[in-house]
Image (cartoon, rainbow, N blue to C red; front, side, top):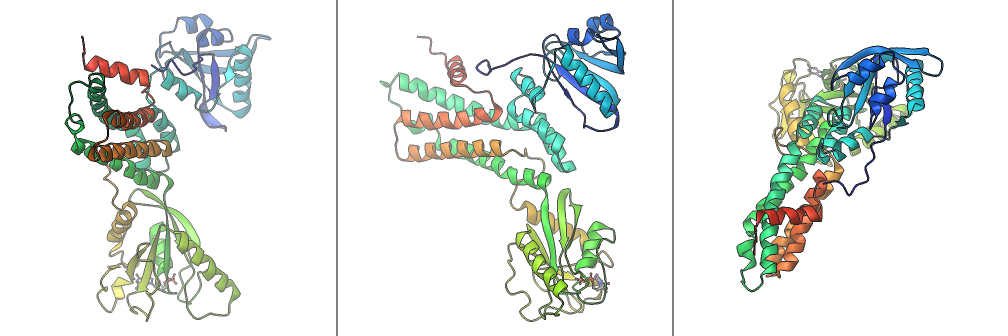
Amino acid sequence: MNSSRAYHDDPITALATPWGESAVAVIRTSGAGSVELIAACFSRSSALRKAASHAMVHGMLIDPDDGREIDEVLCAVFLDGRGYTGEESVEIHAHGSLPGIQLILELLRKAGFRDAQPGEFTQRAFLNGRMDLTQAEAVAEIVSSKSRAAHTMALHRLGGGIRERINAAKEELKILLGAVEIQLDYPEDEVPATELIDPVRISALGEDLHRLTESFTVGRLYNEGARIALSGRTNAGKSSLFNLFVREDRSIVSEVHGTTRDFVHEKVTIQGIPVTLYDTAGLREAASGDAVEEEGIRRSGLVTGEADLVLYLVDGSQGIAREELNGLDREQTLLVWSKADISAAAPPEGFLAVSSSSGEGFPELEKAIRDRLLGRAPGDDAAVIDSVRQRDLLIRAQQALGEVETGLAADMPLDALAVDLRDALDSLGEITGEVTTTEVLNDMFSRFCVGK
Ligand code: GDP
């Protein structure tokens, strides 16, 4: 299957928990002979050697050179073919002291383990067929997820959510390609290309892959978060709204104009999306002559320029000043009618009425922010990708399917269509890390029993 890839099962080790003081530290080992290597420096070596897979053995790590006790530990044993990597492996649960961890790693190196490369345990799990590439990537994404939603999505990928979607598309392409290959072998029975390859199905497949590609926006958003800037004139209520988001007094709320001299920012979560919220200095058109405030205004301009979304506040009790809304980038802006509790008039078209004092309109504002950030992206339950590699391969597969469609319309010869079909299939196979040309062929011929 993956035999073409170089694979070594030499014993490796690494600290699996963060470097630092903790109650427990876990040191992972994996590779042929792991149990025996550790048994050689363990107080209860025969118990370790006899341990069943997934058993925990309590004992003392001992330096065999001088009999010195290194640490009292629990060893979790995973026998060959079991556990995370699919190799023989021992996880050492030790006390989480930095000098202690260093001593254990030194002991393990002396025993015959080498330091693992980044991701090597997961790489071995993939090479041993314990998971496909999308799942291997999900492992990294779970560990680094920045929000609960991102974590849930990565967990879905680990469960094989993406693999299933990709495999369904792959199966369909394999059947098509099989039919085309057979036709190419028997050119005497001429069948029109559109009879073998349904253009409607090709287009539907392309759309399905497109939806998956679009989910990348969602994946990124939930992981990397969005930047949102609060903007509007001085006293429009920006700091009060900022505080409502942050629910703590980080920003200065004051009735004196121009007190928010620089922008402050804070990390908040809006409907599950991690957001960095910026409160900008008041955009007073009249220069105050105050150099510090002017610098604040200049910098806030930079922040609003780079924000994913700008909440532009107009003081509802004052109304819109002349030409105030000119020059706003409407694509980037959500209009807020602030101080709705003391507002003189109903909010004009396109504004969301919000009161930071009473909280009125705040849930609606949060929902509007979420909708704007997610745009046309698919809903939460859909499989979501969060890998540039997967996105690029999905785009390549779609382009190849587009070529098939164009080729069909232009009456291109079957062998040219076969090249594009294979291209699409290979891109999908690369996503999951399974397909090789030989596999494609074997699969095809097992399906279409030629038999003559
Ligand atoms: P900024 O200059 O845009 O940051 O505005 P602030 O948040 O400092 O608010 C200016 C003034 O308006 C302060 O006196 C706030 O108490 C008041 N204010 C802000 N939001 C509201 C609101 O929703 N309702 C009422 N009644 N007053 C508000």
